[in-house]
Length: 438
View 1: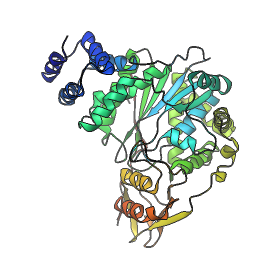
View 2: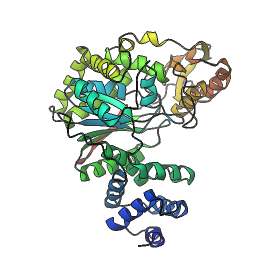
View 3: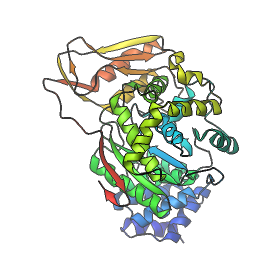
View 4: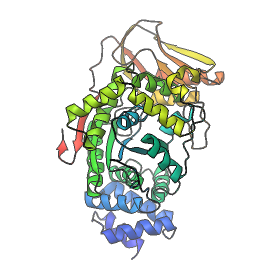
């Protein structure tokens, strides 16, 4: 078998066989296939696409390129969720404890932030003492004791994906739906859960900018999961506007805690309840209405907040910060962005706001960048709100005063004020399952 022939076949728009795909992924992971040939293959996929069958085989081959996490020793149904990334997206810190409080076993591997999107691991690490790099047995032990753990991804998990993603990043082939689906789902399959809920973001702050593309990506990922024996559902949720009012690591922990206390913003609460409902439904906890009721009860009773505290303590952190997040403190330097005219907040470019937060120190430009856990943005107004000239739209916080000017400028570029209010977007556009789109 030759890589040259596989490139020609895919360039011609033909479907590859399972044998060809598995040979290629194994060879590339080992280093037998050079980057220049794999780059040519990725570009062929970018233009010619892949069938659902090809994508599923590619995903499984990538998942099998390294270690698979065996969760069979854990009790109950193992439930997972994955977000495609956004700004102010602290849903894992809310949804996972709700699901665990309702009897799901949540053994979740999460990522760090990069660019304008935040990462759950960085947010958890803003709680003093919390460890997100646990050895496999310690990770499983925390789940056995508490029902929940959220840690960083293993270095041996889907190594083919790490190599392929790095190559896609420098060859302009990142935004190929089959390649995105295979990348996400290879890690999910290797992580070993029984059922997976996908939160596919759509809009200015998301990777998929249109609802149509988001649905197509969700359909691909659901099909991959089902083919590999997983129970799957996906929600298409809005990311044209940041989720909630607080952006940044410690700030998002504080807002997640308030949401688990039943005091969170309406948009964040609604999305989290919808995701938790889907997790519980896939885990056979009842029909949709009953599962939504269970999720609400987990918040109202305090059981979900208790699960977050248990998890933090199990991972070495101080659970007192969960009950008193104000102890996390506030960054020493604050700037404000004020409305330059009266009217309505017509648009908030979520990606631009995420970039402004990163400029303050809340995100990283490269994987080696250092995070400032206290940096971030507190929104006082959101899209659709009326504003008066001089009124504060956002507070920007950082530990380095020199970062304020550029971040405030970038935030200003992301905000549009108009004489009339904008058309409202739904928070949740669609639900995608193996049965179709609704």
